[in-house]
Length: 231
Image (tube, rainbow, N blue to C red; front, side, top):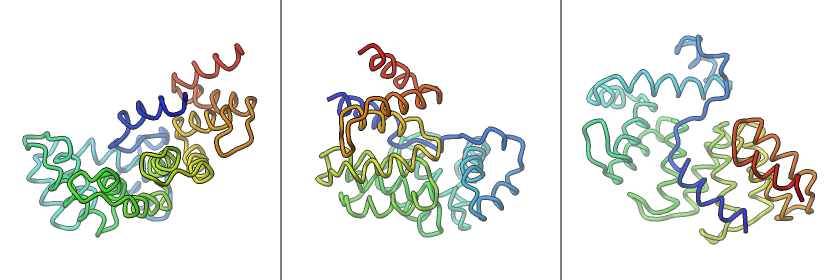
């Protein structure tokens, strides 16, 4: 099926993605203001805050980032986790250390540590595999408004890889991710409606979602929209 084939590409492309930015109008807002707005539930400010922090901290020595993490800075925990996850910034890849830093981030309430630790549990990388724990962590991040957490939950339920396939649940999470601006979720909703996975088959609605994905600069949405239009 088209849905299954594309899923493999998506997992490779965004499995440990950093925050995806949709709030371009926040480019000139200071970090302190973004953090304050984030703490008051502004999801766009949260996404922009992480993007800016990762950019700013990327210029610092890793030892300085570790000092920040040891002072309880959850974003720094996430950055260290990502460094060990991929191996970079002068350190080798170490999935166990990555999981330890993400765990520290989770303990101080960092949302992207929640996402990344959840993904490690999902496939047993650096930790013992625990799909239920992965879903728990990702759900918490999703409920905190992290777009990519909603998307990953949709993917977990969309396929039978983890033994929890449920099209209804997958579409619910994709809908939430789409509302938060994730074009990949729009694409998967289009596939669900085109194939009748968990919904009544509706090719007109599928085209609508493909068009939304295309409008959000996801080329695959453009090509699937054209294919469906030609049928």
